[in-house]
Length: 328
Image (cartoon, rainbow, N blue to C red):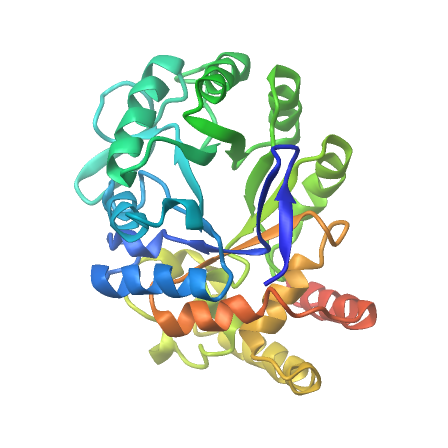
């Protein structure tokens, strides 16, 4: 597995990371087998995948609990990332969504983050978090200056409770505010062949400020794996219903893309999943993009991990982008 640096933090990790959203087993993804999830996390490390990303909101704490069990006695084997700024156990904050019988709120104020980090440390059974990411940004109805949020996170870093600071789902203006207030090492944004907007928004800023761009949903929740051919192949949970490409009328377009790229899989001796992951890792300057792929089964992480070793020719990278741009 190829390795890379995370921003200016000095942290080195695998180009491909394992995302633990589905491991939470909430209504977004359907029930999850915790024992299988733990075996998958262990298998990831055997394959050279060192980055493990979770969040309190994934399964309302359950994902962090499963990850905590998985890394017990193996903490130093993983670069552990979790998030903050989302609460369902308090009443103060701006509404993000209602799900699984609770109101999930955005709250990035230091007083809330001080509680959150301790809860996450307990669930994860560790005394430090490698990368601590602000999951969603403030809303006008419950404001908090980024300087206040970042100031608190920098304090946590000085205390040794976190090693690097990240932010997710933000604007260019918010990116600049973070960099002015402290050391931002990573941003986590949705980016894929079919949804390239945020890469085009942030790649230049990341290069300028030495910030790692971490792409989440690079496989568009599985639609770019080549394994979803008909509506019957769409799994349980509501996560995929929010992606337009899973609609029956759009599947023929996806299938046509898969057929067009099939010769590339033959050329590189890889699966479609690995081809797409390799394309994603090659974006930006080709050195500063981390690819976060969800997995809760061993066969998924085994497929994903090999994408981190694959290097595509520039002409194939450009051809795939043009093909995807023609339909998205």
